Length: 465
Image (cartoon, rainbow, N blue to C red; front, side, top):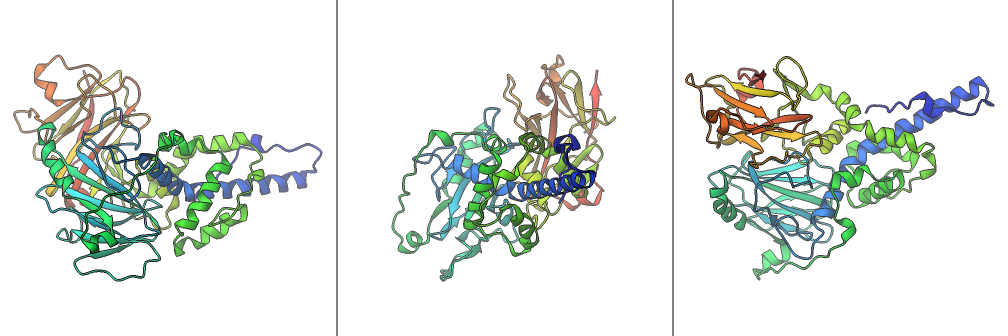
């Protein structure tokens, strides 16, 4: 993991120390801050998943955006600029989700078989994808699963495939492809065929009526903002308790030994007095995106001026910086076998996107993103905070289901601008952008091998007149 270097001006000590003592104190302070940084990076996804769970289960009964613990909820509208719970939302799919507490019960989850992309990602408390069901899975014919916690020792009933989670917290995130507003009733029907219930209810065959939850106004927050604004004591106290309920992996022993020296680990007590400079803590948080990105460059795959993060995304192992970066920029990402997310924030000349300019994304004929049979692609614009960009026509992406106008040679041009194009023939191909900084994601679900071996040419992005 990257060691957090505090500026010397933040570590100035009284001049009464001798030079040797001053250097020793600086080294000790720097080492402590390195450990604080490593502990924060290690625990960040755990605390963020918990904050997301807290927000999304903060309701008495299930709605389209929330449900109590161990209950499914189904989005009914494609994502829009008003959705702030999770960054970099896609506008291609409707989500069905549930947050599970497996400490007291095992849960049975049933996925329907469909003729379209329909994938269920089941993640642990640290944001690792433990299982993929449906599209993109090894066996899409499996539909009924017994999801158990790390301490489950009961039998697995016939007809169920066990998914033993390493943590007591689990997150089911299903994505169902939509072909637009007119297709939503078909998506609702697929969602209606999903089911989630405790094992005891499944075995009894009795109808299951979920218990009511509760609502607390204090938990009505944007998860990423809530976590980034935590004090050191709030953050590490939460992390220590979460690690009791969600035991770290054995592979984490080395990092746990390091961070235990500052009171971070399962059931430990963090000593807030070691934070001797609140400004240094603030700087660490503010610099986190840059630090994590710098430490994750080896996982970046370049395609022209697009780049995406490759393996081991969603299956991170001990790559803690990478895990934290993905949690920060796109919590609940898929493994590359299911989807890749090439990102661009510069044009083909290497100039950073500027909303004062217009741009054209150009696909050569026959070079649209290659996907497997039920795969799809889309290009979505996001603002500097990784949220969808508000615009008068509520269009947030261009995709393979859009009513696009192709050039005479079969190539495709997509126009990026803040204003509707004056050329009426380009309106269908117009993707609105923001006035300031923005960036793009090219999502490719179920990508073919040509995407990875370099034989597919990613689109160019040029400034337009």
